[in-house]
Image 1 (tube, helix red, strand yellow):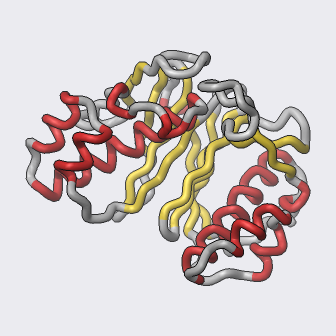
Image 2 (image 1 turned 180 degrees about the horizontal axis):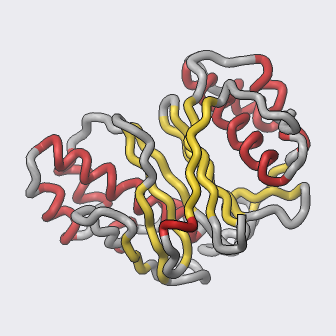
Amino acid sequence: MTGTDAHVWTVSLPASETPADLALLDDAERARADRYRRAQDRASFVGGRAALRRALAEHLGVGAATIVWGRATCPGCGSDRHGPPRVVSPPMAPAFSFSRSGRRALVAVSPSGPVGADIETTRPLDVRETARQCLSPTEAAHVLGLPPEEGLQAFHRAWVRKEAVAKAVGVGIAMDLRTLDVRPDRVGPVGVRCAAGAGPSTWTVTDVDVGAGAAAALALPGTRPTASIHTRSVGILERRKGTR
């Protein structure tokens, strides 16, 4: 990758937990896995964490199990206890973002600055009520003016775009998502302004094709061409040389 590239992995997670995936996790990740009561949820978590480790290991040229996690300082409050995740070791690791929904996951890596990624499995919901909680008046008017099925898709498109920006900024959905206008009426990429945090105020949000049944988006600072975003679909059960 060059300094302006972003690399995105779209991942299919396994239906059941595998020993190889669990072996990559550290003690804290295994403890989190143990808190899941449903086997499917646990498998999704374990597979997702293993996928993130393998993707970063491939980029960094290290063993997936050797990656050590930490947290950056929260741009909202200055705390280092709940800021965005980062790689502590190896040092000088690139910015990354991770999202998981059902049996799908998204990993994004950017060596030149912050990045945000989000994926959401399309599911039935009360669009009218949810739109009031997280869409701007303009966005809500567009989404609610569409036929039900189109409105549901437009809502999910808006949701993943908003979460991608919130993750890139570093504050997550703690911010008021109604303040972000992500133009769900337009095909991406779209420019989005965000005043939260101390970083860039302008973001380019690109839709990521993850197939039917889900929506996904990638946020990068400033204005960037879509040609600089490289996507690849992989099955998490793939094992690559040098990632174990």
